[in-house]
Image (cartoon, rainbow over all chains, first blue to last red; front, side, top):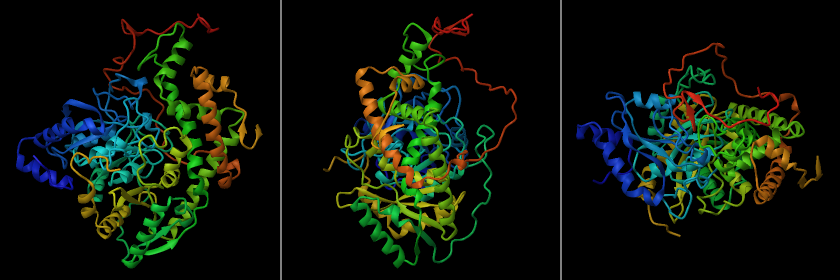
Length: 478
Length: 100
């Protein structure tokens, strides 16, 4: 049974209604994954029986995939890490409960960089995920499995988590729309913590409408996550006829040539289409990735201290308590996770703390403050999502600093706690996708969706996706 | 703290102890090399530097009541590597001074 593309939630809803029996659409999605995931390796845990949703919600009978760091009661939760091999979650994440109540059926968990640490989904204990648009390239990361699964057309949406860009960059690399919500908007209860001052859960889908629909189901205050807050202000206002977008040119200049050239063309088209584009200054944000590297590593070293093989997870017996903990951690964590823990404890150790962690914390303040000021003069910020096109598997694997550079345009909004929407804006002749990013004021998701819809129309995203997204993924073309 | 601008003094024994990792010679060499690269990279955040006074966390949140809550999680011991009659079995700590 073939499916129309793009695969939207609405299209599936119609099919579900016509099919009659609950689970009909879900069965097809599951069969497609079984048949096609051997090539992509996007799904880490495909459940034998799907997690069924309520029968009467807005997403009744709609299949989706979650990321392997989001808890589902009675299902594996291993964050693509050996140290959580065989771990079964005793409870549900709040987002899992919310989607179940909305009727969505969960098919399984997607592959990811271990604990969310990476930008290519190559740092998974189970091996890398391939980009369905070009099998020789990365789907991005760390939510690369979620992006690849949606781009392959198996599910209309998937959940990811975004600490420094882990929803937006994979969305960009797979020709999709991805949202990082405002910090405090979506509960992280049941999300395995990487860097708590930065982590957010967000949806990936083909179109803004679908991302928005899922987002409004996820959003809301949760008594189990005290960082969730009521919006200080909900943006109900209509956008002006000539929306104003702030462009941080000195940041954009850090992109590679193909991305810069494409961005310049987008800039021109947006101006011709009646948008007002103004230059904004974000000088501290040029160092956002460096600041992020310090803070995320520091928080990760603290958050991951709990994994010791004693009460849960994979234990490596080594005689004494101390040696057992050290061996369990050394054999359980992959290379990149160890790098971040080592960097984090170094940055937090008494001798270096002021020089690294505290300076980074101060610099983060400046990033946040300059975003606040920039957003006073425009409706949203506009910049590319990633500095490069999707890179080849293995290309950045031995160079951690180069890999971190992939987050240069996504870490600023992460540090500032602001909502950011990545959406497709074109493709190269070889079908590799370009992506733009809109960054909004706190709790400005509604505004981002409205702007995003206008950009989708302007950049003909429907036609673009029909050209570059192929059922089940394409052969490597390079 | 630095030997020069490009090279940091790294006490890897102390760092791996804080990280609760146990690296062999090859892993140590690699960790040293990677950390030097990362530290050179993050040293560039100097351009965005501000006085340390603003170093408190920048995110908000609410405080909850400090009280015991029933979690209602029936399977909380299911992931234990080793159990004995409802007790977690863990390795001995002969090197711990306050051992009873």
